[in-house]
Length: 268
Image (tube, rainbow, N blue to C red; front, side, top):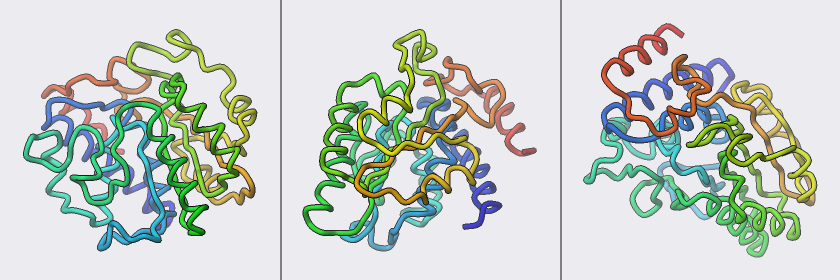
C-alpha cells in the first residue's frame, strides 16, 4: 500500500476501534489508538497469506501488549483473515475476538498474549526457531513502554542479542503512559535508546504516527543483531479528549464519549 492508502486505513481502523470498544463496554482505548500506524506498517511489510494463516513460511507477528488487541483485529479483518462484521462482537463470550489475542480462536493470531513481557519472549523463541530450521521468515513484536518494566523483556533481549537474531524486530509503542500514570512517575524507564543499544540491538527512534519514518526503520538492513524501533506515540491518538490521558487506558466509552470521538474521527 502507498502512504496515502495507509493513512486512510489508519483513520478507518481508529473508527472501528471506537465502534468495537463502545459496543463491548470494556477494553483499552488509549493503547489501541496509539499503535495503529505501527501495526498497519508492519503488516504492509509482512509475508503472509490470509487464506492460509498457518503457512509455514509466513512472517510472524506477536502483539506483546495484548490489551491493544482491537488494533490487531482491525488489521487482520482488513487483510481478510475473517469478516469485518465480526469486529463488533469484540469481547463477547460467543466471539472469537477475545479481549486479548488468542491463536486458538482467531485466524491470523500467531501467539496468545496479554501477560506483559511474555510476547517478546515468545517472539524471540520464534526467531531462534527460524534460525535453527534455516527458515527465512521474519518475526515482529510490538510492546508497550510500561511493559518494559517487566524483567522478562530484558531476559529475552539478552537472548536475542546472544543468538544474533537479525530476523527479529522489536517495536516499542512509546506513548509515555501506563495504567496508573506516566512511566516516569510509576517507574522511570530512563534512556531507552541507550538501554536497547547496551542490550545488543540496532536501535532506531521514530515518530510512531509517521509512516515514512516507520517504514524507513522497518526497511533498514541490520545484520548480526536484533532490531529495535522506539516509536514516539500519543496515547489515545486521534481523539482529542483521550490523547495523552492515562485515564483512558481502560475506561469504558459512554454514549456521549462515543458521539464526540466519532465526530472528530469523521472529519479528519
